[in-house]
Image (cartoon, rainbow, N blue to C red):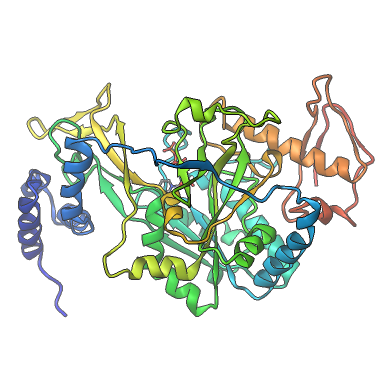
Length: 479
Ligand code: UTP
């Protein structure tokens, strides 16, 4: 097959763009050299323009209206500690999850395509130094977890990492430089998600980031369910006999990258996609609410749940809507395959966000840094696939055990708060093994402790590890 010339590609692109009234994207084309032309045309060719046109109408020229489902109930969930009737089921589930891992039937899947704007780190977020002593990058935290899993179950766990155009090259290079953090490179697969252009909020026109580039951003973590398919990752999983996907985000160094109990409960109950939850700390905590809406598990964003529902309490004082989604899911491979195989096509809904997006002025060719939101960015969210499932469970996890996200540079969900939680988890694990850990009068650990996930991914792994009898105030202890 002959490769089409730049001229042919330009003609095709112009035609496509004209049809959707976005041909200004080629405004500077004549001033570009051939490499720059190729770059711009590649971006244009990768975009589904009829879809952009529909989105301009539905999400820019008008705002999609969120309709609260008529019947919302709290989602039932498996508690962190089982009731006595469920102890047997939890034992069986854990055994089932372990068996899936031993047979290599689980894929670890990390979404790492985001821009990490709030953190303000220059590289991919996975390269951010996350742990209290070694300053281990987030990617390495997850890799250590998988190394430990491999040792535990005498089976490597394939790891699929979704990147995006903003960080794909840097992510692959980082893994290479760091020798895949001790994992077999054959078992680590990267693939980029799709991008969408930012759209001018008043004109509905896509913005240019430079004369040779559209202002593109990744299409949300929900884009993963399509990208898994289009990248060939689902086929690769099937070739390797993988049945379940353990979906996690890159920004949580304590995440159980694959959790046998959760995967087992999800598999035993025959679910297509399941979720972990945390009891919310307060009614409007910025976590999606796992609810039952019209009989299906559904996430309702914290901003969409009416205050009177968010604040409802049970007789025991707990919030009635207490299940906060922490973006950890178990997903059956054949569920993702069937979504993508649907004759009607498949697209999760897009959510609209108004953002400040720098752009090149078509009149002057100058770059403009807006000081108020000038553009609409569109993102799909993975949890919107939950209502498409006929079976879906929710499992409660523990905040200190598994949730130390790094999202913001300061304050809530920052490196400092994440380090505090990591240290607290280490302290609890040591205390459960009889180590005396120094705490201040508020009960806070007043030492710095880090337990490598190669040493332990759960407290029982510390059996047989030489531990100190006590951790003194101000000590720094790495195990
Ligand atoms: P966030 O929603 O926290 O976004 O992503 P972010 O990009 O990391 O940070 P901000 O909002 O720009 O500050 C949660 C997870 O989803 C991934 C992120 O990489 C992170 O692991 N994600 C997000 C994607 O993979 N693709 C996207 O398009 C968006």
